[in-house]
Length: 320
Picture 1 (tube, rainbow, N blue to C red):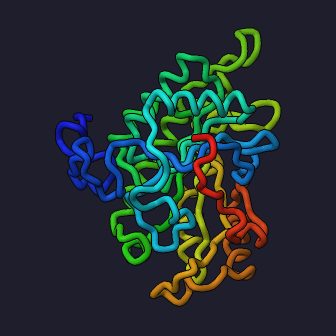
Picture 2 (picture 1 turned 120 degrees about the horizontal axis):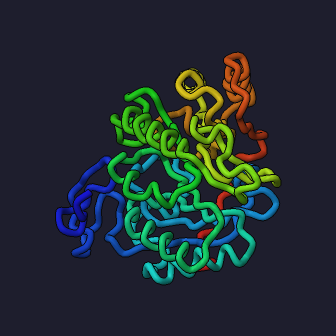
């Protein structure tokens, strides 16, 4: 990939061409100055990511997707978070490992991808050994992902929509379905590279790694693999079933699905009435039952209590 600093930013699918290195904000709302809103142990990810130790979640400010229902809206706009250097970001990763984090979890880092990958490489040189998680909305260019794949162990993307009209209405991105499908396909193929663990006398090459199957340690923490999240939206359970069908039909049980029941309506009324209410138990259960009927074996489901503002982190600069 040619340097976005020379040719304008093309990191995300928007390809806005902003001179971010020159101090201009891209569609993501940010210059190329890395901004972090929180870096702390996070207990509310999937069990194989957070477990009892907690995930070392680093929340980056800004986002190119602009979902109208975003639960991290407090930091998805411009000028949120605190500016950090690559050297400081490297330290943050190592500090999270020292705190006992099961992994380093890069949350919405795509618009800083090259700089973040540089910090991860340096952290690995300085002793970072826990897995690195790429936690994203799924709206990413394969060309950018290919630049960072060498430092990512676990891919944790969303697949939000399969219908272009929904993607356009809720995220102003009619191309989201095709872009996200290509990105997830890249992630699954990358996760399928041979994985070396333990000593030669143990399982040096993990059985199933070449087919992209997830790899976990004895404590149940994922070490390598793909988890695709899908937030079931009120009024859109039929599209959710289409998404489950697509993912299972394409990848079977080589990936994990995470069906989220945590939709929280924003305080400000949205122009789509269904998004101004909670997801019903009936709507969510329809999607879960459909997944089971297809033979989905690797899936996380959530209780209704998972929805609510109390599960949204306080973006107060902790750990930055």
